[in-house]
Image 1 (cartoon, rainbow, N blue to C red):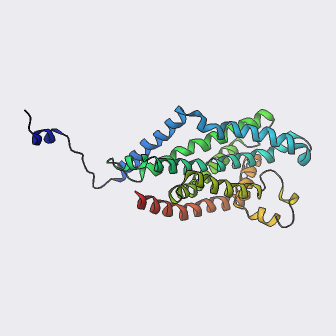
Image 2: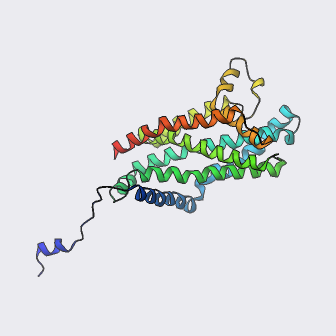
Image 3: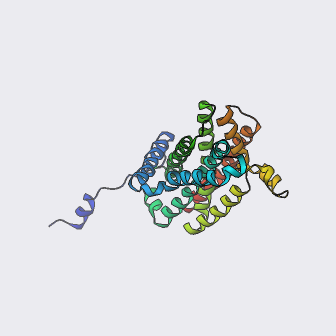
Length: 272
């Protein structure tokens, strides 16, 4: 008969990793980013907001506002497509906070951090994987616009504007990641995010020129960071040029990350 001591001696012990190197942290982040991509593969419905919504927005807003604002749909598309592009990509950043909150509530994050992996990898992996969503939003929106007659003057400008939108969406993702770790319910994250994005979206120049807005709303729309990004994308894609809007957009994104990233990491590590 095997003694109790021998039974316990046969059980392999876990290896405790005291220090995680930067290289391993990057590899762990890549592994968990792949987990995020596999979630999209196994649950394609998670991509509805970046595949179906851009098409609906383009067709719907083009049909409703095209004749009123520009005389016809085709003339309106250079104004509309950058607005839809930015709105869809920015709106899809909400998913980062919601999924992070759900992982915390389900104990998935606790399971990850009990493993000998970088503690920051689950957070960083989700943020990296989300960039695929923004890229899909860009491709679908531009594709829908081209199908309706949109002809951007500068292909290089379109690529540059796509990179700008993905970068800006990644920066904003940190804000919703912060909400994901700070709030206690996924529904609360969704509620705050919807409120914030609705205010930003409807007080911007996304779908109509600021000159058509009421007097009290016009200065708000002109300083709205979303308006700065949309104006930069319009100039890049439609004319292949850059101006101060691009500088403001990049600086604004860097500022968001400079504030939101340390706050998010601090709260996230404190809760582990």
